[in-house]
Amino acid sequence: MKKFFMIAAMAVATLTANAQYRAGTWSIQPKVGVTITSVTNLNNNIGPIIGAGRAESQTYVGATIGGEVEYQIDKQFSVAAGIGYIMQGKQWDDYVNATGKVKDLKLELGYVNVPIVLNYQIFKGFAVKAGMQFAFLTNAKMKATEETTGRTESYSEDVKSQMSSFDFSIPVGASYEFSNHIIIDARYNIGVTKVNKESVAGYSDCHNSVLLATVGYKFKM
Image 1 (cartoon, rainbow, N blue to C red):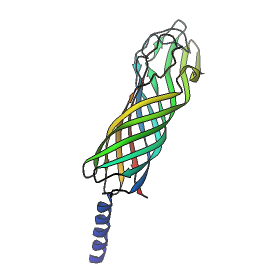
Image 2 (cartoon, rainbow, N blue to C red; image 1 turned 60 degrees about the horizontal axis):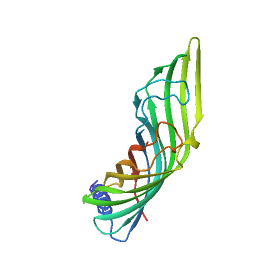
Image 3 (cartoon, one colour; image 1 turned 90 degrees about the vertical axis):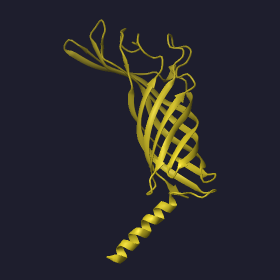
Image 4 (cartoon, helix red, strand yellow; image 1 turned 135 degrees about the horizontal axis):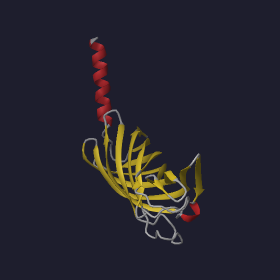
């Protein structure tokens, strides 16, 4: 039993020691998470898919998956570059138009993201970060369900041609790495470029607003 506790203590000590990465070392981190997103200035007077109507907007909940490669500059600073797929968009409350009730109206956007961030470790395991992110649009759809007397019909319209294919944002956030190398990461991506093309009437200055939380595991390379 004494031998078992000695081995366990050595294992914990090793994990704790490995949480500190030496300058010049590399690590890789696969991660998954959830997103809470919106599109600014895309509010009322909607109806690009079903009639005209007014509805209050909501946040859109999605998911993200990807990974990052990190280089340790010194004991406090590191730089990380990643790639991942993220579900973004916007959702609206139900509303009534001339023909019936519209439910589950949402704009669904999919992007391949390439973030580059600088990490600063304030104290052991805890870091703040900021950087830049390039994103490439993969899909864009408006979806809704319309209920009329005795009939329910679902709609889906591809609106990718109305959206900008490239999006640039500024990610800021913080992360914490536990002694077992599990990392929780929270970021807010501030959209800089316009989501839609100028040709889309009525919405000339729409930007992505993205809050995401991920959990990952860091492997030393």
